[in-house]
Length: 130
Ligand code: THU
Image (cartoon, rainbow, N blue to C red):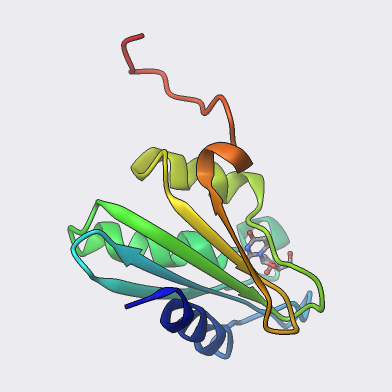
């Protein structure tokens, strides 16, 4: 599965978003090092703070499948501009893959590739020996 395949999966996943409050749909597609693919979309709640982001939905699927070594995550949002992961999702990514490849897309079919360390330098870890 290459980057363009993953982008297509993220775009498709966006159609499953439950976002009646913000009307901003996000789809995520995650590729594991073993080649597993997992998708997620945001799920909002009337109590807004309980909203689950697309990235975390996809990561939780992979982890619950026992597929913990993550390679790349791709995001597709319903806006015109690039959709970047929120800070909470960056921290959840860091838990499993400090060097995860993060691909963000915009509404015109463009994409950018980053590494998690660029987006979240100095990641919080409490149990790592220096
Ligand atoms: N959202 C995500 O799914 N991922 C992010 O990284 C940022 C925000 C969702 C949450 C909410 O349903 C909508 O986008 C607007 O904030």
